[in-house]
Image (cartoon, rainbow over the protein chains, first blue to last red):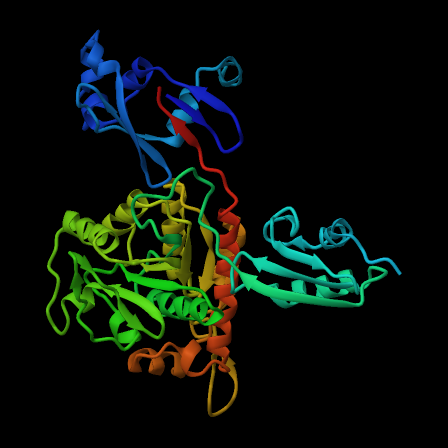
Length: 93
Length: 359
């Protein structure tokens, strides 16, 4: 998946990277209980492939994976902070 | 004497800057159908981004003066028109509300500060300026729009789509029209979200320049559903000057900021009162609270509205004050605020949202 930001910067994401960053309660855990992503070491290939992306208002993307998992709303600020390009990695460090 | 070229005319018109968009009117594509005839008569269309443009008259006289001063020009004919552009530059129209160019929410956080009165008059003022306007009452529990626009018509269904009700030239939809009289709506939160979605998806809004959405108080289900369902152009926040209202208005504003909805600005309602018997100006709920909050938060202050008996009377009798007594201080305040809202809304037409592609 690729995003071209308002300022022109481009970010590219792999399905694998997005899946492991899923912010939903099931994956992250809630009320002190660890989520699924903290419990598993590997994910099946269909869990890592992006099937569909839809816009939520103008603040987030809902990403559906081929496995059917689609509960994560990825805010644009989360996605911006996940940008893996060299320039962004340098500014983060 | 030789007549000027089209380029010469565009060259001088490029000196006119749009104060809100921060660019010249030629590069913004506002000058259309430019013609220069053999006698030196120049005519063109000046297409504004909103009929409620606050600088309309200034633009016209600037254009006339600048072009009139070019040597060889014998007459200038400027036609002022407006074409509201869709919010945001995007490849395809949104699937929900496809015919609606701009969606403007009116929110306050706190109840009882005059949100619906502001929404109704804002919509009526935009309509009066010449725009096609819809008014969606998103207050499911306490719909006040039907009474304020004097409509008791039950919406009809055509081909499975609810038809909005016409009132004062506005297209109106409200739960108060669907369930009129004293029937309450007793819903839990998720149902409120569904009801608001239905009023967007199952209503035949048609083509609109602006859809004004009157939100209920609070920072919960209704506001969240709306901000998730559609890319709102922006939100105007209403409050009264007292601290207890501005504090909650700030919470509402920050909520919309978190959802990446642009705050168009703050509006101060019940800002002052002129006593009809003594003529003195009283500031019952204090004064200037909204302007101070706007400054602190770095958002525009859109204007202040007086506390007037006429505004209340006309709301109760079903005619917005901007229509019934346009000369009153209250109506003028609403009209000025509508222009400011329209100008702030136009800015959003030139924003490029993130473009997402999946391979």
